Image 1 (cartoon, rainbow, N blue to C red):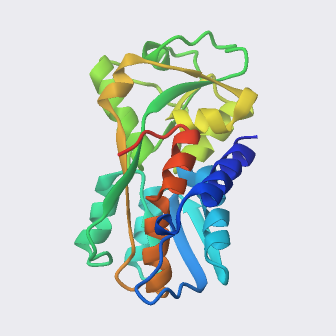
Image 2: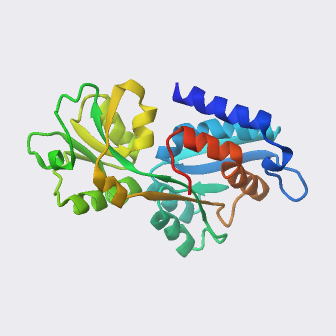
Length: 254
């Protein structure tokens, strides 16, 4: 349902936006494959945007590699061919910049915040971050080296809570899956992930989330195989169509 709504938002903007909203390279030619390495939390919205981009630029095909931002950064610094890198945190993007794998200044295109995710019906009776310290609660978190885990650490520190995780996952979608399958009583994921799960997962707001908001930067790697496509895709994400889709998925604007 969410994916369909995002696709409709992109299609509506394509129909109503002027030609200036459609990114082009200086010579107007954008063709071929565009390989996008993107944080797992962007899966649904970027998949929809990829289809919109292909419609706006006939002859292009967007290929995605969705994973934890730290894993993607490592792949890029090790030479994996990528045209675009969209990270869930500036710190992960900075690793790629420091390695010289990204030379263009990254730009923040969205922001995201955490929610407590619980299975439908909340069988663990979770109400806030303090429940993550209960020994009987089954808790799933992201590992600290990935952006959702780093954000969770900030939130717990702000709340003065020491969590007792039963599992530490390498990306936020893996954490969400634990809740969707009923294998965890509670998890910390992005609110956009709770929305993407539909009725399988319930989200609980908590005040400390304001202390752990993640900025999402995007940039083309220095050795992007399709530099023109990379420039165009980054511009498309920041266009009216991109902003509409991101807002529809629950992201905040930059």
